[in-house]
Image (cartoon, rainbow, N blue to C red; front, side):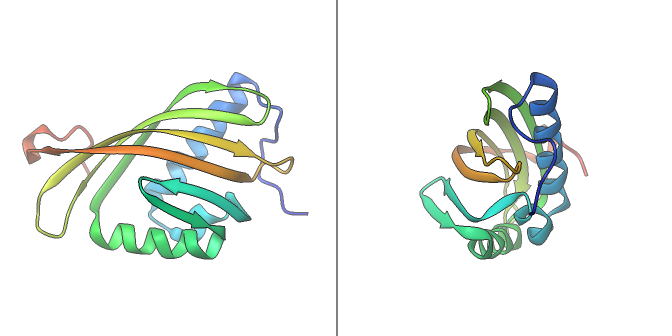
Amino acid sequence: MEQKLPLPPFTQETAKQKIQMAEDAWNSKDPIRVSMAYTVNSEWRNRDEFINGREEIVEFLKRKWAKESHYKLKKEYWAHTENRIAVRFEYEYQNTAGQWFRAYGNENWEFDENGLMQKRFASINDSYIAEENRKFKD
């Protein structure tokens, strides 16, 4: 049986471990690595896009990182329950036209008994920034 430690029920410490693991995976910009934290039939809402399953996650992330260079993400603990974690995040990227952005958002995560994320709902807003205003340098 596939598992991704730590397993629920989460403590504040183990919830923060999950968050750091997710941040590290997303900052790797490796779609396969990121997708392995999710169930094979994981449900996502990312902005206005609905994504189902690991294969769609991988394809979504490939498209995302083809358009977002210098991607750098920081996630922060917000709250947790037994098998759910709420996260606040911000990330920066440069689009293909050279414009820099900072994205802000919140994610609600739900995990199965094996520690794999079965639901991820993200609300995200982008703001234009000047390159000199970047917080997350390469």
